Amino acid sequence: MPDTILELKDASIFQKENLVLSDINLKIHKGEFIYLIGKTGSGKSSFMKTLYADLPLQKGQGSIVGHNLTSLKEKEIPFLRRKLGVVFQDFKLLSDRTIADNLKFVLKATGWKNKTEIEAKIISVLTKVGMESKGFKYPHQISGGEQQRVAIARALLNDPELIIADEPTGNLDPQTSIEVMAILREINQNGNTILMATHDYALILKYPSKTLKLQDNKIFEVVQKKG
Image 1 (spheres, one colour):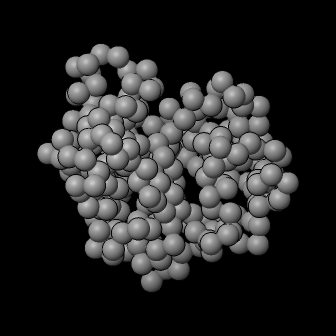
Image 2: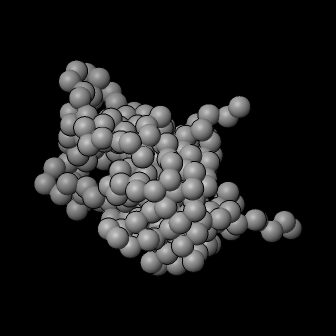
Image 3: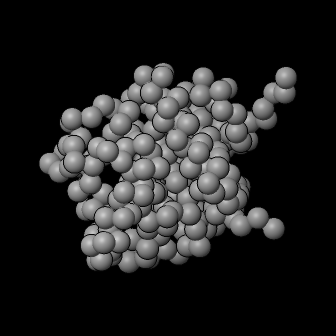
């Protein structure tokens, strides 16, 4: 039986009082790579925010990486987020510190104390995304594609059970998008589960995988055409 990373049963997602998505029944298993597609305003961001507890799950049942989303308490949220890696469209790097110090900041904030272990972890994740020689640079000194690689490295710091990538190629040109996508696919092949929201249908065609579509307040799986 595959490990279930995420399960939602009869779940509805709200932004304040507004119903965004209803009757969600969904399972994501360990090791899957899943696309999340849908028009702007279809609820992708609200769905993602519910998964990392930025929005509460108000109706239905939900569990993610061993945490119950329905009964999650405020003090448990940091522990949930340590098991998740989140990659944003706009990178969200701290501009006043180097790449290495951006990563060090996250490690210290999540309880790492041993200096040698911190340094080793930073080198390890930067190597995974091909940025091991850029740790001394500041975000403004590297390209958008390189910043997104660093954002992916940051998401890997605490060995997450699930990586949530919200439009990770949205600000990148087509060639850079393919490079970033190749990194995400490699990370997935090494065992990380990835849920990726995207508007980039060319990427889905190039790297087909299980696809969930948001439409008319519902989520359903898109059946890939063969041939």
